[in-house]
Image (cartoon, rainbow, N blue to C red; front, top):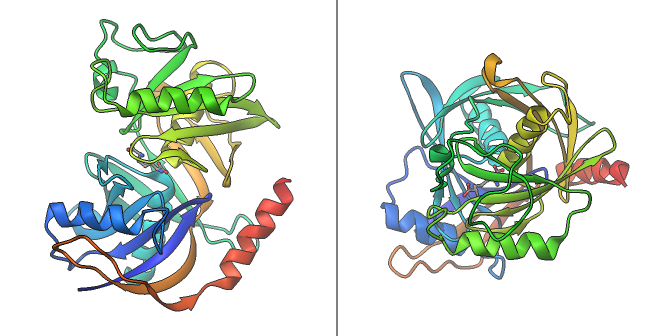
Length: 316
Ligand SMILES: N[C@@H](CCC[C@H](N)C(=O)O)C(=O)O
């Protein structure tokens, strides 16, 4: 079968994105498609597969997200901006409530954060600190800026569900080898955290935050939107930023602007960032074998790629 998709990126987190509102693939086939399209050694590559899905009485449209290992995540906030943009373009909207796997999000078109950079705002919450929501099998009800018994790290973590699970540690300097070792440990689905988790090390940088994330189902990534959201919320809890203050959150792939409200004010996290489309393509997909062919690229969005490059150049 032929699959039409848009290759997109949000803050450097790149994905094939499909309008799947009328798609009829079986669950196992979506997983196969995600593994094939998001394979970094393959012809498309990405951190996962994004699906724009049909809406319902309460949502203009929905989003599903499959990691590059084929597992389905509860959310993906960089991907949500790109999916929201596609939904807006197809339905003629500039704001919407979106159905996610286990929650809802509000999305809206925002003024471009730089010339030619299509910008979307996402608002999600409440962020949860409950250990059970993060999938941590521990005696404590929550972990806030404290070591996690049984985790092979003495660092202080905050566990946050966005609602996907995040472990966030503030560090003086990100040690990638340490992050990868801990991420790999979590990827093995140990009894402490059998559903695995996204792990982030966060530095205070230029009045904002710098977040480096090992993503569940992906590995070390240039950017993770829900990790930036979890880190902003955790930074508010730790008094590293003020709740309600908008800060720049940097990552390897770029930046977003983020703010969080306190738990007593709803624990809502707002992110403004790019939703850039890179090219439009179709690709042959064999539903049986899960194999894909070389994509046929119909249009390249050079202007959007250049606009984002200009943002990155300003960060250096
Ligand atoms: N890149 C995403 C998060 C994707 C899901 C994550 N790997 C998980 O399994 O929870 C983002 O931008 O939020």
